[in-house]
Amino acid sequence: MLPPHKYKSTLVIILLLGLLLSSCAQPSASPSPIESPVVETTAPPAEDTPTLPQQANLAVIGLETWDAGQQQAIRTAIQDTAAKADLNVVELGAEAAGTVPENAEVVIYLVETSSPAELAAGNPETRLVAVTRTQQTSSANLSVVYLPLAARAFLAGYTSTVIAPDFRSAGLFLADEPYGPPQVYAFQNGGGYFCGTCYPYYSPLVQFPLVGYLSAGADTTAWQGLANELLLNVVYVMYLDEYASDPVLQADLAGKGVILVGSDSPPDTVQSMYAATIGFDLPAALLSLQEFILGSAEASLVTAPLQIRDVNEQYLTPGKLQNVEKIRKNLEAGLITPLTP
Image 1 (spheres, one colour):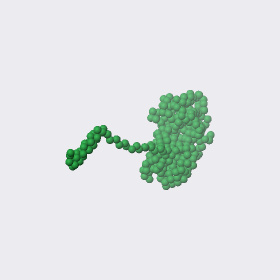
Image 2 (cartoon, one colour):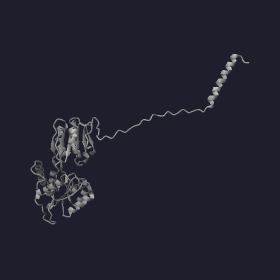
Image 3 (tube, helix red, strand yellow):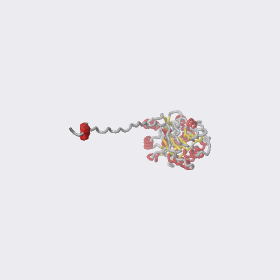
Image 4 (spheres, one colour):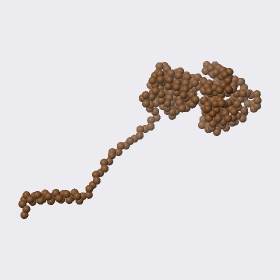
């Protein structure tokens, strides 16, 4: 029999061996991976109102919709004004026309805006400038640049008829209200202002200037078909408003020997057959609102001056241009009303 102290030592050794064997017999369990917490991200809702950087505090909306031949002149006029007060300019697309961008001190809408007065009333701390084809009133923080379409059409009718041999001119216009019908009527009045009843000496004997019009969205083929109908009457000069200013149509007409007059600057491909552009001096109109834009003058309503540019003296000779300029000045002075026969 073992002594008591050796018995205890033996018992401890047996217990330790049992524990060791037990741990070896169990399968080793790999540690459970630590799962990363799942963070749900929700995309912020799309904002209807564009947000400008804090340093961009003059927004120009819809410049890309304007006459491409005049866009840089408009941009320069705005930038020159903005530089006088360290206003930084950001250009936004026409899709922003119904908004007042956050952080903007001044917003200039170069595309038609349905309710500029409501936008101005809802944003009294922002100065707005709306360029529009419809008669509107200004308000405390809203200045309006009005584009007199009828006056432009009258001047286009006069110009086209002045340079057309045997009075044989025509114009293509938008048919839709409210802009189309007044322009058609004013264009014919402009031609008649030069030559009265405007009957040609040679046949076919029809009264000029002729007009054609289609609804918005008409494609090139439709405009070409309409132009070809007018050409059956032996038309020598054709005016194209902005809705008919299709480069393919212009090239087709120029290729047929038709002299062109337009509301927008022409592509290079038709320069040799292009007489003049009858448009608006929008840069001058915006510069006249410079003090309002800078916050040192009250809002006002201005009418954009008419402008004759891209002149080809082969067709619009200096003497004829002098006559056209006289009509332009009389229209702006109110001495000629374009919708009165």
